[in-house]
Image 1 (cartoon, rainbow, N blue to C red):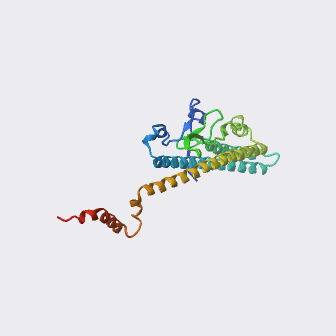
Image 2 (tube, rainbow, N blue to C red):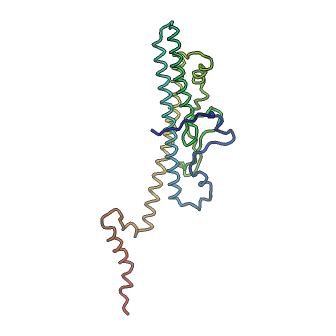
Image 3 (cartoon, helix red, strand yellow):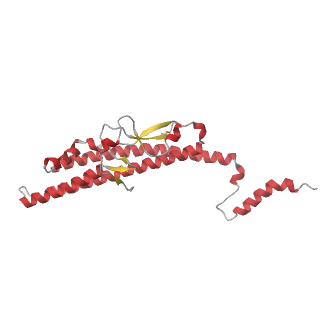
Length: 248
């Protein structure tokens, strides 16, 4: 699981602009230059790096959602153990437990990857990368954004801190249902990314085979084998043989 960095402030809404989508910190600007400045092989390498970066971002999203689910599940189980008419001491303890879980929920919601928030607020643009799709065109790929900050049940859970009101078991269950939907969105994004990645690997393999066909002499040299230097000598002998036959 990819480690996530936690931001304390400001909120996610202030980190994203409404005018343009967020971009992960890789060579997207490179792809906007003239296509003639890059070979097909180098483009495949850049695309593969982009795909791995998106995969890491979604891994971080899933890890944060798992932590959120755990917090709601634990607090819901705690509420089930409370008596119908708790004493003042029990109420005070319950409030402390709630604040602990609420802080953990807020921290997971504000988690980031490469300084990019994992979750939006529903109004901010998605995190976007540029990938080569199976049709051969370079297009924008929007990373799944469950927009958990805009989910009403989660907002209600956190609002109890200000309202001095303990959330109910039903509210915790509603939050967990929303998280299951969020995981489904990320899973769909993974499937689409997987299709693109498989296409890229097939294209990269074709390019490598084409490169070897265009350079047959290179395929005779095996740097991984024990006869590397012998292969070099044999190759040089082949080139120099006509010169050695010239007699003065």
